[in-house]
Length: 335
Ligand SMILES: NC(=O)c1ccc[n+]([C@@H]2O[C@H](COP(=O)([O-])OP(=O)(O)OC[C@H]3O[C@@H](n4cnc5c(N)ncnc54)[C@H](OP(=O)(O)O)[C@@H]3O)[C@@H](O)[C@H]2O)c1
Image (cartoon, protein in one colour):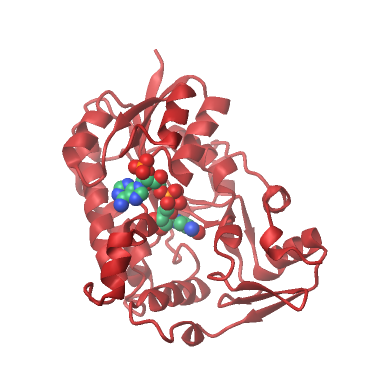
């Protein structure tokens, strides 16, 4: 009999990617996707593609319990930008009605949503695997040096909570998603990428020679989820299509665009001025953490995809050069 994979927030980047991968490469799984709004265009398109689409809200544990029933596996994640970047929340931030740092607000919401998903998964008798899209604990692995990495820390707090629930013992595996390659297209300025006088400039607070994980979310998320369904529970892997240092990534981009480029490592402190919300400090501290402790914080339990393959679990991955080639860089076109 087919196994059932429930994908939370199936309209989102990670969820939609996982669904697409399973449809194309693992047809033996039945797929159910949750959404807050089954009549949205994205949800309707998913249903048309054969996914069982059900209404559930990660703020509502009962809706999750209903959505997870019968699942053999669940892929779950939260979205801190989805939480923060609503007109209501941003309005409160701008009006000074939400006390800084705003990341604390998103942290509280994400942790509660994660706990809701854990509590719901714990009610499913036949559940074999809960794959949690996690990140390393900034406060934990920096030994308290960096305290503002809220959107990383929330994922770690949820991971610990999931592992504390007896019905989920041995069933929780984690996918520490690397930096989304799409960031450079969707938010180039936030990531310090600009075009000045026909040349590319990348002002980035990560050392040029430091390897960081990059993921082609659309192509590779599902391959990692599948590998974690096959591997023993408790496995934690960094979701990286490739590890590239700043020079390597920038060379790929400049070569593709036929542009000259300058990479400058900027100090973290230069990123945090003029921001009463505390959000820039949060981002700067995450960069500082990655620079100093590595993306996974040096957690010895977190493995790479290569290590997972050595253990016998295939993780087909794409090349970041291919992501660069197929992406629309018109905003950075160099005449
Ligand atoms: N950008 C990076 O480099 C990077 C790297 C590693 C990890 N991450 C993590 O990835 C996460 C975002 O993942 P993503 O880009 O796949 O998510 P996303 O596409 O922004 O959103 C996922 C889905 O969640 C649902 N959603 C939105 N706001 C929500 C809310 N307030 N409550 C409940 N559901 C909500 C929406 O679906 P419906 O409207 O259909 O319900 C949305 O389609 C972040 O939390 C971030 O920490 C990002």
